Length: 463
Image (cartoon, rainbow, N blue to C red):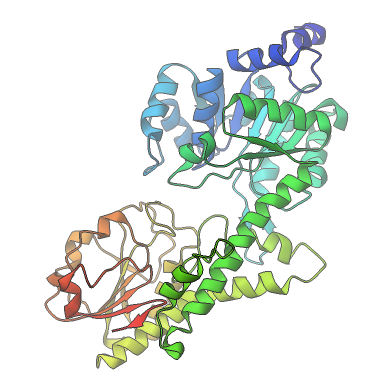
C-alpha cells in the first residue's frame, strides 16, 4: 500500500491527512494495527482494553511460556477480576494474539504500546533496561507515521532523551516522521481493568503536538475516561512520578505519627481519622512498610536524577523503609513483655504480598520484616494464599493457612490483610500469643478470641 493510500485510509494516525472521524473509524475497525509490548500485570489487561475496541491486537511477551499460555487463552495472572474470562473471549474471537517474537510484531504494527517493567537498580538508579530492549525491537519495524505510546513509569525527560533517540537510530527515520507520547498507566494490580476503564483520567503528553493529538484520539476511543492532554511528554512523565512521591510522603507522615502513639499515650489512628474530617487534610494509614512496583521506586527518579537536593523525598523514603525494622523491634519488645525471648520464638507472618488482594511481593515489607526477625534469632514462618512466587523470602519458612493452627506459635504479625485471613480463628492457638496488627484489621470488640492474646496495633499501641 502506498503512503498516500495509507494516509488516506487512516492506517497511520501520526501525521495523517484523513479527517479525525475517519481516523477514529480506522482505529475502531482494526485498520490501524496495534501492538502491546509487555504482557504483565498492566500490559495484559491493557491489551484486552485495546482488543475490545479495535478487535485486532498483537501482544508481545518477554517470556515465551507466558506468550504461549496467553495465545492459548490461558491467563497467567491471578486475582485480577474478570481478566481470565475476558482473555478467553478475546483470544477466542481472534481479537488478541500473543507471541514472544518482538521484531515480527513491530513490523506489523502502526501503534506501538510499550509497557516495560521499570524501577530502580540496587544503586537506586533508574532501571530502564527492559524499556531500552523493547524500544530497539520496535525501532526495527518502525515506519513513517507510526506512533509509540509509553505506558511505563519513567524519569521525567525519558521520551525526549532516550525513547526518541533509540527509535531514530534503529529505524533510520527522522524524529518528525514518527510520533512518541508518554501515557503513563495509573492502573494498580488487583483492579487493573477497572482502573484502565475510567477510574482515573488518562494523562497524555507528546514529544510534539501531533504525537499528543494522535495519542489523545486513541485513548478517547478506548473510553478510558477523561483524557488530560498536557503540554509535553516530560510533564506527563513528571505527573506520574509526583503521584507516587505524594503517596510516599503522605504514608511517611502517617508512619511517623504512628511511632508516637505510645509516647503520647493515645490512639493515633483515631486522631488521623478525626483530622481527616477536615476536607484539606487526608492523611493515609500507617503500616509495617510501603511496597509495590511504584511507590518505593519512583521517588528516586527525583532524588537521584535531579542535581537539586530533595531532602523531603529522601526523608520519606527513609521513614517508610525503616518501618519493617520498627515493626520487628516492636514485636521483640512485646515478646519480652510476655516473658518470651525472640530467639526462642516462632513468628508467623500473615500476608507476604505488598498489598491486600494482590499476588505480588515486589518490595513487600514482609521481605525486610522477615530478614529482621531472622537476624534477631526468631524462627519465621510465612503464610500467603495468593502468592505463587516466594523467591524473595530466603529467611522465611512457608506454610499453608490450614497448618498454622497446628503449630506451636509464639507470635503473629498481620502484614497484609488479605480477605482470606478475615475468617481465621485466633482462638485455635493453645496458648496466648503476641499478635501484632500492622493494618488495623483486627477488632477485639467483635472477636472475643483476640482477648486471649497480647494485641498490639501499629498506630494504636498495645493492650
